[in-house]
Image (cartoon, rainbow, N blue to C red; front, side):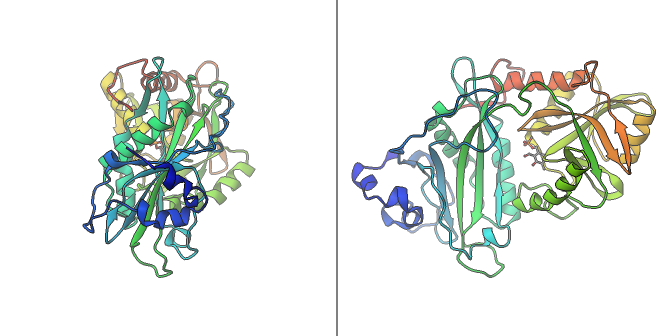
Length: 401
Ligand SMILES: Cc1ncc(COP(=O)(O)O)c(C=O)c1O
């Protein structure tokens, strides 16, 4: 880790002119002119803020994505030189040329992951290697840099260590991390970017459900699609989210809180920004937990993967990644075979669903005896939360930073 000398910091351009900072030769990668395919976290440079922010109260009222930590991580990439030396610098606004492809053609992708503080005060990342793999794959899908997953993870770990005081030590709260990669070539042509900026910002967040589970009604969307085969549904790219905003608005006008995205022949795919699971009894009488398969239209969620692994290890019911349709769900509801339905993702862990709007009908979904969450939803939430906060070692899924 390299700390900038006071003389370099006093130069002033660091804090106030991030664009110049990105260009200043003193601060460019320790490039020898050779192409740098690795992100050298061991050489990370650190410039500490001279104006630390007042931290919010860490409790369940912490909002999502509004309060950011003192610093951010930055790594530049160019086709000629590869990755620059990573830097941790004071949180600042980006200054971009208005022509960059991130602002015109959606040449950007991102990740969403959390750091948790355990009872001993250690900071844990949950299966971060899966986020790095997905970040790599999203970059590849958009012709962004061939991401060095290990170097990226080590850089993030150093960033989180530096921001340790911002990781809430309250059960249910965490530090949300948003690694992002944007194309920054100053060129209006539609072309693979020759320059990119990777950065990571962080915000302390409260739990998705501040006062215990609150089940949601979702609307199965038959007009608009989130993803299609050959598209980018399996990548975490901004271009997947903007087109979902209008259907989300329309569904909320009808009284639903999330959109249930359908695929071909009304196959059930995902809900809002979560993977979807249905726990039901099949027509053959088997108890089964089912979720859509990773056929290119589904985001390979870290939570999804973890739920599948846990449920398969428990071995108490059938676990299936296969195509199932709204017509099948409709029939199962009618025949009383649906036990629980829930969304799964980093933000909520699991989010119980108590109703699905489909073709002008409202399908009522059971939600346990108290109407808030079924037994499997609760068990998965508790098991995953215990792993997040280091209370359980049922799975070796934590990276301590
Ligand atoms: C479309 C979509 N599906 C699923 C997920 C859940 O993924 P994860 O469990 O990795 O948070 C997310 C959240 O990032 C998402 O945006």
